[in-house]
Image (cartoon, rainbow, N blue to C red):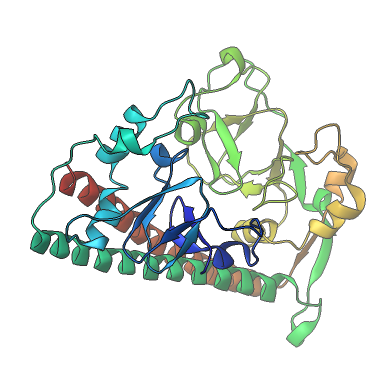
Length: 358
């Protein structure tokens, strides 16, 4: 029989769809048989929602617990019910162990948990509603993913062109030819708007990002002062910014930013919006790869000012700069609107889960 696994987010799934191969023991004589409609849960992770109704027949590791219904139930209803916040909290309270790493919800404990359930007809209606909502969320998530891929494709199309491709002439300069470093410090401590440079969200107030200010001891006298239109390079690497985020500050209020970052002021007649997108692309990555060092910390790029100022910046005519920036701005606006709808749908589902399963 097919080997099944229990996942946090997707419930019970064939192991082959998760890992692509079977890494389990050859001797499966002690494995448990699961029938369609059985509830399977990971006793060590039940308090995190590691459970699900099996959509097919199969077998699971002896480490899992398999529950079969004694009365007619709606599989869709109970699949959602077992992941509801209130019931998850009951699973947590009834799990045994000294720490969360050892919490274990065994059958004698889960058997005693009392729940209130509606009639089967009502279960089916709830399941149908949640199923419809989940399908809508899945479609919206796919749309978000497609738009992200489309944006990457548009950026590659623009910033990986050869200098004279399609008759478009490009100019190549050094970063230091068009920017100068910000030198003003917050010596008087007047400015309290601490800014963080995030790969995902750009230059935003630190309090919005961390829900608190984390500037060291509140001493920001050595922080750089930035204004609307300034650019900031953060050498900290991440999956979305493998050589560190390079963003443009768009807020009207002056901000201050850690001296670990490089802050720049544009000195050339080049569209700032175009440059903001250029530095979101990978057009300058090769230079960092060839010239930057890894530094003491593995999560940061270490470069001298001279190397940083040597980053190549390529740009087309002013008309093309504005055109490319407008195109990418429109794609980004559509992506953000689509993501906002997905977030709203997810909050709606979570709200229903809290209200339906009391």
